[in-house]
Image 1 (tube, rainbow, N blue to C red):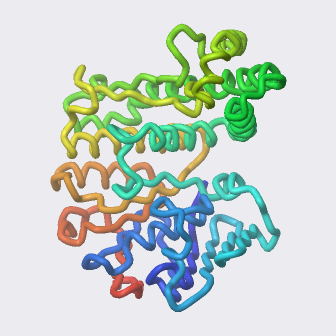
Image 2: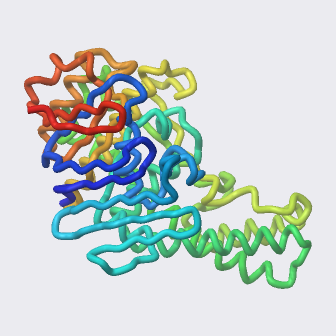
Image 3: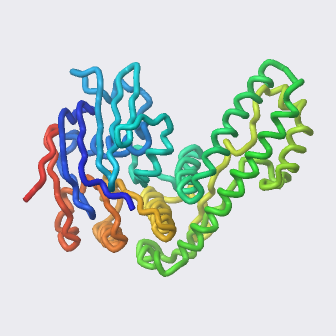
Length: 362
């Protein structure tokens, strides 16, 4: 179970020096635009991933009057501290330095719902893989090794192809096929668990957001051609070996687990025909189904929601908030200032943000 009891933010965008003790349930941050709400969500996300969901450019994050930012959090019995300059990153857990971001994700599992990161429904394949593999990692943490090995091997193969070198390709094809088969199987298994969760009584309330949950479906595309058995390493290897000549011509591997995708449908309509409201609603259902699945497996993530009320009516906002309250997960959400009357019954802890200063309302 992940519960943030203390959060400290220094020189992170416009949050100069802020300290809060959030509630273990729903925390609501309200303000006018451009006051720092999304910056708060981004800071918490950074603590769980050692990266931003908005930018890869560090100078955009560090306050213009500083040359470093610091974030620290007490979560359960652990203290995480992250300090980053333009040249150095230092991350500690209980004062012991770590080098692997997966250790952060284990202690601080975070599910984020924000337009800045993009909706998963009708989103980019990269964003879909990101959310999918977040869930795979928390269900089967050992899969992280297969992911890391796969990307190292892919880099080696692309270097060999780019330099027209064939003497080592066969070895690396075998290695890639082995790890790709593991990744594909774990992704397929996870999506099957998600489907079962989606149709269980645990998500019945989410059916009020759309006509029927059983009309919402998603199909996994492994990134390999249809003639390849995606969970059979020999089938993957034989495809690579058979197509070596064409791969040498294009100079990179254009198929594989790094090209995987999820194709969403609702009521037999493709996701590209969904309205923005449908995209957001179905994305939230997918995200919350992941949260429910992890809770069922003993992992209780923290939920971050930025700009919940845009493109959703009051009734849907209320259903989602009631559902989160019943899930009993710690939630940080922003930007429903004009909908405060909608959420009074869930009794959130409310914080006001004004020019980067966070104060709790009494």
